[in-house]
Image 1 (cartoon, rainbow, N blue to C red):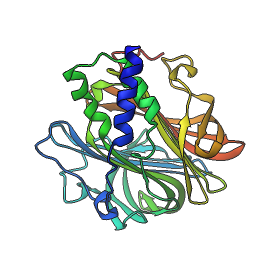
Image 2: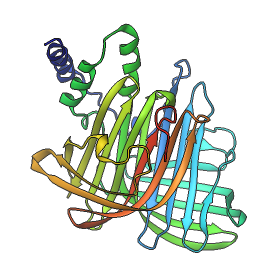
Image 3: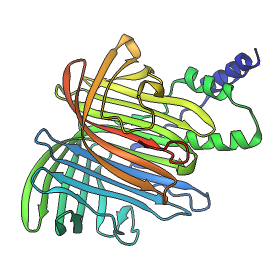
Length: 338
């Protein structure tokens, strides 16, 4: 009875919440709150093609912890090239030393530029990256993608306290995603090649403390027919499973409404190599999502506080082919991977 009342209170509050209407120019700027501990601004681009090559890049700017970056490129003949060492000092905008994300047109075009060294199993390579992201879908604001009933139910299950509601501030972060095409050139040791990847990008900001993440899943990609899908699920160490997501067809956006529990991924303490899940979106849209892992790139966040496995997979959505990212993350204090 008490839980039912608590759920009703939260749902009523969520229904009355004010949606922040961000101007596109603001969304596409680096956000900074230097006086707020654990504030984080993160931007990410991926790219996958049908030949087996892929590209991953992320920059995170943080107030009281070291900035983060990801920079990976895989080619079947070259293997995986990574930049694990520092990129250099933070600059204006989305810049860390040799890596820059440059907004050419808000919600339409971005440029990714890098010149420096990357490492593979074969040694050190000189790499020049000159890529452009061109949007093919609207820019999705996750304020609209949240499932109020699910969020209210999870909050109602917990013991309420001042410290609990203080922790809830982390889930109020701003989050935007977009599908598109990433094309341009990547030169490795003077040998330049042109690439055209299907791509997803995101930009989020707010409080982030990796040690308070229990686990998460992020599944996204552009289908062969031009549709775009996103399924995002997370569990914190103080809150049960939350989910958000969307499906875009012919520029029409349908938001996620039904999703599977984490328990469908068996065993729970392992990287998911193959899976088949069913999800539902608005307007009665049902999707069966299947995938098979092709590659996996690991990331150690804040010296072991959290571990992310960035999966590159091929699969289908309702039998339509897709090259997709299947990202799984675990708190190593909770899950001992096998």
